[in-house]
Length: 155
Image (cartoon, rainbow, N blue to C red; front, side, top):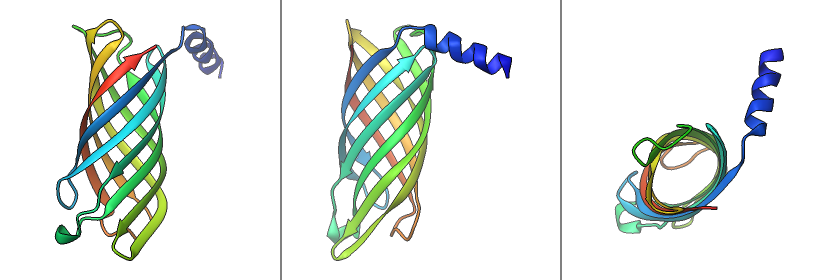
């Protein structure tokens, strides 16, 4: 218990850094479709927290539903950039809405993945990310894969 309290105080004593990411990528389940979104995060040395909204469009001719997600995630990241790259793993949960024609499902989802934030110049970074989503309820596709690239600005 004392070790946990000491760790919490150490993490809380470090300065917090926030960032915002605008991204575009591909949701690959069941067919490749464009995903776009935004994420707002805060980091405390190796621990970070993020809120993310993303939207993938529907492609009826491929029976690929639209997917909108709102996730809260925890990130474990390298404490400092290594050669200008800060690696992370992430996991979290939130809500999703899947639609295809008249069919619609809204429920809880969890996700896990990882990526890197690559320093470009000053507070501007490129961000690469891969996630696997597990959709609860009765979605058409219970496991969804997503990859994206984005522009990240730290402040």
